[in-house]
Image (tube, rainbow, N blue to C red; front, side, top):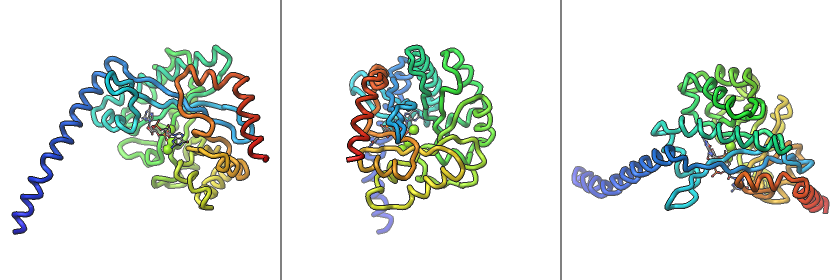
Length: 288
Ligand code: C2E
Ligand code: MG
Ligand code: MG
Ligand code: MG
């Protein structure tokens, strides 16, 4: 009967598996068209100085303007871009768009760096750094105004020589941030040996601030000890910001200050009128 139930299980799951496989293939076809027609756009989330509430940079986050489904978020399609290899062309487009937008901001008097997220698949290309540099040169954005966000697991370099790539990026003038820090496995020695300029503390640890978790304290101490800046992700409440200020976190991102927004809205956030408004709003509430 073991055989029977095995067969039943098989028969039971097959339609679901088939459905998933079909859906995946449809998504991949959809994405090939999206890359061709440039249906993507970048939203920007400001990164803010914890003490002064000044916007110091912005992170580019990909969105897909789907002709039928509307705005689609990266959680739904980054994996498929990676599986199909389309991530390389998409990645070229992201760097180009971010570079042009940075240049546009600089020309308007808001010369802040932009960060872009890089997938491990992109590091597997031996010409990654050269492609990035050549592509960016066409936009008028200097390399030192673009920051590369990588995840912790990329430091281990499975399928590529992480140290060599990071050294090349650094020599070319790019700064490097480690994203979602604390969620993966990291060899702390890498953090000290590699040319990393900031650690972005994952939102899950920021959420634990109220429960007096010490993980975030540990990460902030590590940053101070080795002299790199600490950025808190996903800050949603005034209390979280107050705690981060008190515990010497350098910068933060989160819905508290702003959700990711289109470039036109980011420009709005950068105006001195808006910055003044936020500076008076956030510290006042904190001191109260
Ligand atoms: P990430 O780089 O860690 O980006 C932060 C994510 O947290 C963004 O989600 C952002 O909208 C969200 N977030 C920011 N502040 C808050 C907050 O206060 N509360 C909450 N609940 N969420 C907040 P998003 O845009 O959906 O992006 C998800 C992930 O997709 C990114 O995580 C990044 O890993 C990846 N991604 C986004 N754009 C790109 C891209 O252009 N290339 C690559 N390779 N990956 C990308
Ligand atoms: Mg990121
Ligand atoms: Mg992140
Ligand atoms: Mg995150």
